[in-house]
Image 1 (cartoon, chains in turn red, yellow):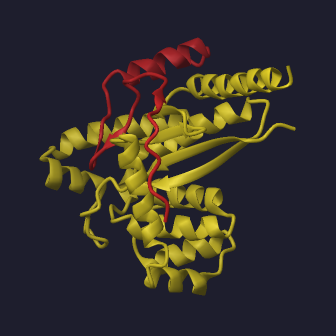
Image 2 (image 1 turned 90 degrees about the vertical axis):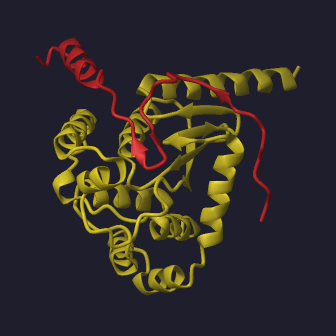
Length: 45
Length: 222
């Protein structure tokens, strides 16, 4: 088996994007408003 | 035709953001003018969970995190709404919280059969949408058979832990990269994208990699 690659990664994107860490998945409050905004943008509301 | 862009994705089967992130990533790939080669890697969010944990994610949150049932309902309601926004119908009332080590072993077996992407989708849907159990060997063998894999062979490799070392290698690689949460996307072993980002973010990384390749190609012919 090969050893793990240890080259550092260049991180891209929103650092606050939703992730699961440990046995817990962060569910930020701001999402509901974001969904409403997106639906408004799509003229779905 | 240029070589496919390699994207390695660390995720867990019972990670709600992993399935949502998968859909967002797929939306980016669908709009990308080029080939993308995806490989899934194992990440265990809760390796100490019993396979036969008696309860739902709401029970799990209450028992392990001390979150009240009312607050858990609100949290799971939010994630269900977000899932719906990308076309996924999460059914938390029927989800079986479990240990996912065998599901990860199955994903490695499926990779050996050239069916890993299909198996990943089947496992996520089984867990979040269909209310199926994804921790027990017999249930996993049923799911594998549903996508055309050899059920008996799946039972054998899972019973013998044939792919356990591959699961552990994935976890070790995640640690080497410093990955603390999932989903986590690694593009060409160079760029890391954490979380269920918007499709535009994934699209931008794909375009960036393609652009860098084109530049390197043009420089090599000078």
